[in-house]
Length: 309
Image (tube, rainbow, N blue to C red):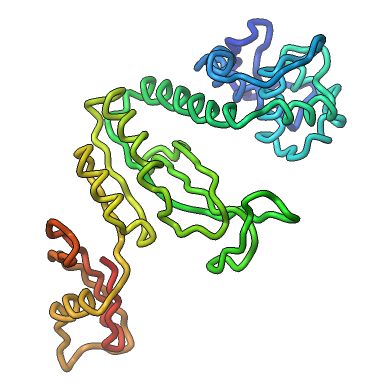
């Protein structure tokens, strides 16, 4: 009978992963997660990066261990603190956490109370340290910063939650950034639900460009964003750090007129078929210091023009 090759994990030399027989666990994939966390020194990074408002005199579980347990629970699909009661004797959780028993729901709930605003900022530093380690292991020389905003629904009278007309619901409207090449989650910033997409984007983007220009000075960086980020704040920041940038523009009458000049439709055009052409030109708003290159997407179906700079 064919089987997977045995692999001995580094975080626990007594543990061997194979697929021969024996008891199985639906959460055994956490062993691979733990192996990755061990390879980047997650516990050490977290200990050096995070501080908590901890006034406990006696405890069974330190804050970093509680953080790891929460991460493992979320990764395995256990979204609530109360799941700890179901997992307290789970052999996989005890193995990856190196404990005889995991923390209870009450311990996890109290853990949240020890997180301050300073701790939240430190989580960003921890995330950055992990990404830097991963980029070093990959020997990555390129980075695409995909700017975006998303919406997180809230229920009740939560602080800074507001109605967002675009999403038609109450909640938060955070800024997020991903690496477009790897999918790495680069950064997030919580904002009130009623702010515009690009609100605060300069103070959000600038530290990332500053960091990567010094930490990885040979890296080619491109910033991408949809039309919500078509603002001089983004252009000027990218120009300052000599980063490439591709930002979608909102369609307007001048852009439509530019695009229309490229449309050539003959009398024998098959109206039942859709044809899309791409053209490049330059465009300069009166308030801009320089011309910007624009890519026009021309959709000639039924003589319609769809401008997508």
